[in-house]
Length: 125
Ligand SMILES: [Zn+2]
Image (cartoon, rainbow, N blue to C red; front, top):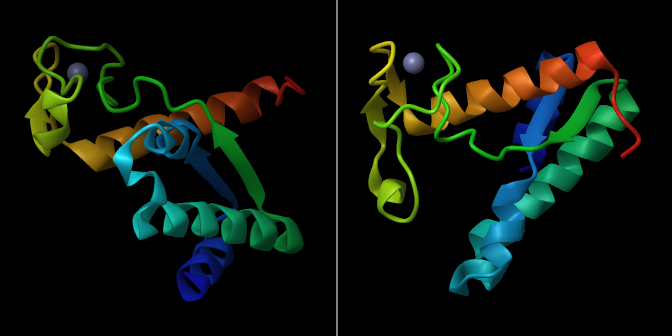
């Protein structure tokens, strides 16, 4: 985690992470899993190292980031939804035909949300 977070901070001017995953996991049996602990630790490392290096670090709202098509911006009927959708790793947008890897598509939407926040100015809350 230390190596990865250091590389991320050295190679990027801004880092955006989603806000929902950990909070959602807390409500499940996976709450105490090492995966969840690792993710929380990685977020903390990224935040601290970004701060030290002057890199932008923001936690953004990741709601619908999995379901929204990062190409056309709509939530198509074909996108993965709910518990059943968790097993869908790759899908095709029924609106624009774009083929998505589930995680890459969600990451693109989180990045776009981060860019929108920078463009609009970051609200105090
Ligand atoms: Zn689309």
